[in-house]
Image 1 (tube, rainbow, N blue to C red):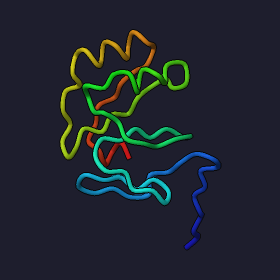
Image 2 (image 1 turned 90 degrees about the vertical axis):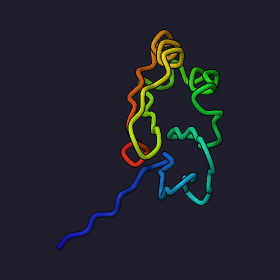
Image 3 (image 1 turned 180 degrees about the vertical axis):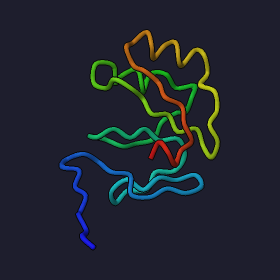
Length: 97
């Protein structure tokens, strides 16, 4: 069997997750988090539109992990993201990771 090491270059990788946390590199983030290839940090959750909207022009789509089950993206958030040119793909958190 041949094993190939995965490399991400300078991009941050989500190395683990569990109930209420994500491990990105050597950091553990608790609660809602926003992870981009260049940064990872806390996010105010679905009511906090400013944080993902600040990524307009830097990302094309937001993979939105909504917990153990897929849920509906609140209309206001979805419309704000789409107006800023950011597509949103809701999914469960394991798939988003």
